[in-house]
Length: 377
Image (cartoon, rainbow, N blue to C red; front, side, top):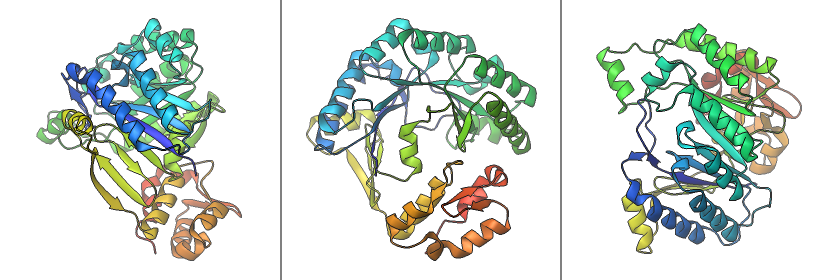
């Protein structure tokens, strides 16, 4: 099994209207002590175990100085057994970076960037509460290329209130014109506790149209295919060899260590999570205490179900029958015979001699297909 390292940076300049992540604004004074606490937690978290990837997520990791990110990368490499060419990703807000900053990241060992573009439409960016303009995305990619990055992802959100298929087509065209290596497309979810949820609840903003969102997804599939991208995961497209290795670890239901405020970890048999508030997290680490605030054990039934649900998200790869049998000691059909029959009957699953995958129909009904494997035996 492969293992990934996730480092959570919970700081933002402003809070987006749709975001329910564990992020905070106005905590600039905590940036450096938080970085040092992260280093300490990393060094306590491993004793030479192998790890293949590092992913800085947030929040806005690009608010940290390149040398601080470099310190964290070195802490990971000194604590875990990592290959020299390990994938090291940093999420960036396009409005927070320039060529000197990205050159600094590259010098510290970062080799992959992920920019939160979200939309090319000014009104949609305003609705989302994003600080940047789409021109900033183009400038950020140009700076990334100049700094030597050859693996760059763009995140987009579709299915927004007021969004039309025409504006989505323009966003897709503008995105592909920038020449990214990887694109992640996420349907907007109206999360409770966000400004967007309050607007929709009061009727100030219409609830997103699921049929329009389905049309947007269909257009994205066609556009990305024509541009030479492989649709390798339900929400992710990549040029050959540019798949996100870190996220593939999640989709294989393999172990990962999460460091930082509110970060989650999984050993496959056990899950645990850290204190959410940055000040609480820093205080616990500085006092020599564990940051862990809770955990749950993962039984075999849950593990098998999660392996199926996550693995089927990989559209080309699916779930390997031999790997499943080796992991769980018996063929997949011994656990899921009825579920496989139902998936076939509904036209959502494709079963070959070596793997189970979603059909094209299953792409559009993925939630229904994946729910077949909840519970199990």
